[in-house]
Image 1: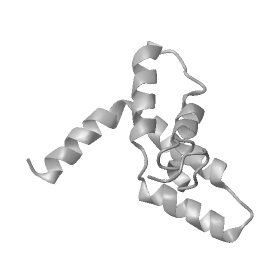
Image 2 (image 1 turned 120 degrees about the vertical axis):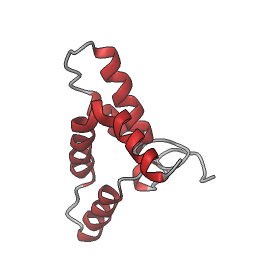
Image 3 (image 1 turned 60 degrees about the horizontal axis):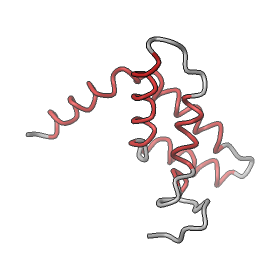
Length: 103
């Protein structure tokens, strides 16, 4: 299987949450905003890289599946929180927010 096929399959899986996924970048940008130029620059790199999105994608997909077409106003914030505070990898910022040491 070529990487193009894998990318197309992933795009199909993420299609139902494409708008939410794009909005998640806005939430990340808002939460990482800082008056310190270097921190702002680093948060820009985090958003542009697009990594660290598996957990939020799963949360958004499950929320969409269980919502039965209803609004889920807190889902984006939950996706951000789930990713930014994960104890094993320090979240999207690489900052260890829990008492667990790095792996």
